[in-house]
Image (cartoon, rainbow, N blue to C red; front, side):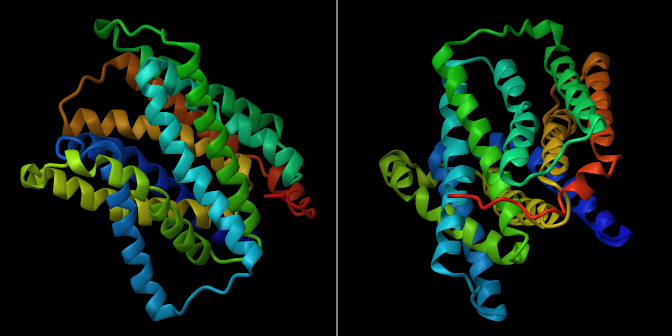
Amino acid sequence: MSKTSKSEAYMALSFAMLFWGLSFVASKLALESFPTFTLIFIRFALASCIFLAFILIRGFPRFTAKDHMKIFLMAIFEPGLYFVFETIGLQHTSAPKVALIIATIPVVVMIFATFLLRERSSAMNLLGMAVSIAGILLLISGDLKDNWEFGGSLLGDLYVFGAVISASLYIVSARHLGKKHSAFDFTSMQIIYASLLYIPAFIWELPDMLWSDISIRSMWALAYLALFATVGGFLCYNYALTKVPATKAAVFINGIPVVTAISAWFLLGETLNIIQGLGGIIVLSGVFLANIYDAGEVSCKSEPVAIKL
């Protein structure tokens, strides 16, 4: 891969990390007016409309029936099951534990990528993963005044781990699809399929929706979620997965809580102390360490095994 392509890929990953990190603040504002799954459905439905508008200009992506099935399954993994598992898990276990379990996504991606894509991880990549997880532990436990406890039920932990598996399968699947198709083509179909998946949950919540109570700031937050967190975030991340190994791209996921903490500090006035700031620096250092050695990129040039989806 050329230096230009490599730079573009890491720029795209940085933007995805920024867009998704800010999405938690936007979601908090949007949830003031929308029920959870109503918000998710409208977010992806609006994003689908944006992609459909571009498809009318560019032409419909050419996929085989098998490719459509792979993309549909990828949409089931993320955002489909990921949001469901994470939302339910948060109801049964503590937020700090959720953050730590989600931080294991790069590790699970590494395992899947080893067997399904034949990507090898370097010692530096493993070190970066470990450092980023340690940084997240410091980040989420740094606010001593809140006395966060790592409690919760085993069932809640299992739901969150289901989110980890879903996200990891999405990353590996996107990497596989990106070897034959453009990021725009399979991302557009992923988002369109995802919006269809949330229709039942939207219909179920519809009777409780108070349309007259929607605030202006919730509308702006929804617009951000559709345009930047969904269209921009998934497009940037999937583009990067067409250029760099899944294990390297996955580590950027651990940078999302750092962006969220900083943006909540600026936009919502939430606390961010020195310990949390240090944790954020450690997380970003881990992301950097995991991506400075190119052994994984060399090994991923070998032909991947077929992914049976």
